[in-house]
Image (cartoon, helix red, strand yellow):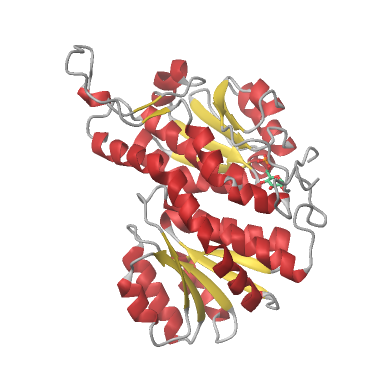
Length: 386
Ligand code: G6P
């Protein structure tokens, strides 16, 4: 058993630590980072020097591009991966993107049309709600695309086309490496859909370059393990933990809170920082710990102001920011806030880096609180009944 865990104490710990490799597997053979100009090769096309090839989608790219909207449908952590990539998809595919929790889509019997492009995201490929939503969308004539981690799974088989995330078998009930690989796969899908856009070329190239160094950056951020253990020591007796994020990192806040509640069995809530004034602010006092995700992206100035408003109320903050963020360091100099410093990447990939220390935190919290890491009470890896 311990051989299966590769020397780690738990599968969740092993799977968190595998992420430099699992995201690489997701990209393998699909991302062409740098095709150097061959002076003598007349077929070399300078516009396409960086390319994404998703074998399971190549024949469908133009159909998807001509659809009326892209609809993401998933449950749990897979839903959070969709949320994290929604803006990337809107910006790259330039189509309206909607998100549906599979159970809610079915409860509402929401309208789906034949020119809808429905993307079903599921680690196991067997989640009953997602599978039922797939049948529902198929009956309505939509193009159904599967993004799963399990070749031959029900969702992989029943969709018209799709992408395998190739993260490798995930055993811990709480999804970790599948989450980061789902985000990589969905980003690649956005890149594949925007390949013909000259206007988006430099943006695409910078995302592809960033994908190239992502495994090393994840390796770097995993070095925060000891720091996350010490943070977990500090938080282990708490009743509750809030996580604030916005923009690309709203999903990070929801996913971090889900990890803390599902494995560490601690109440935790992910909060959209833009909604802070509409309720959550009432909870803020000197005792309640709050994690604020404030890495440098378009939302940074707004997050700085969130931090200042929380500090003005004496809040106990743990701030996740980019290494070398002197502004944040200065603001927090006087208070007792703790900083978690992570490497910087392009904003659409930052959620992939940001979730890693928070996965480590939830892992250590669980061990310190004495709960079962790989099989949290009442939960199943794959929910095949609805
Ligand atoms: C269960 C698991 C979660 C997972 C969710 C969706 O609730 O405990 O970790 O995110 O199902 O599973 P799927 O296999 O469809 O991604």
